[in-house]
Image 1 (cartoon, rainbow, N blue to C red):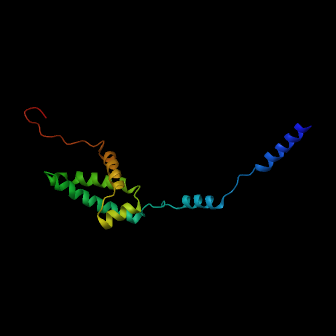
Image 2: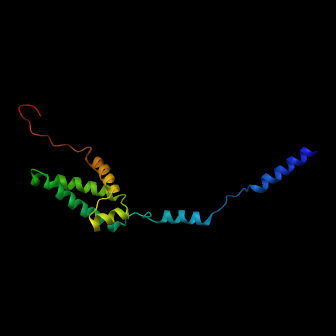
Image 3: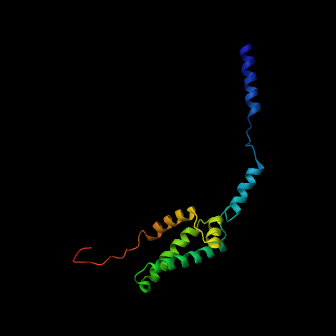
Length: 139
């Protein structure tokens, strides 16, 4: 009899603690809905800032590449295409902080350097590399 009483008490206790309906948290569900409706994630740069970044980054990149080039007239189009691809790839996931530091302070953040390395690999991995001069049948 005591065993039956303990089992029934335990069954009531278990049923009283659990619910068939999931517990709703209004603050959590509203933030999830707000995040789904916003096109720009928190901390991500706006489209206009991304466009400014792309233009400025491409301009700086082309200038830097042509300064190191032996034949700037020939390599200008290649540098423009490569730098534009890199700028677009970086701008896809550009943070507001990184854009602000690059555009306003002319400062490269560590995050921007990592994104640059990734974008460079992505944009240049399938491009044909220029061959060096052939000297005496050897390269």
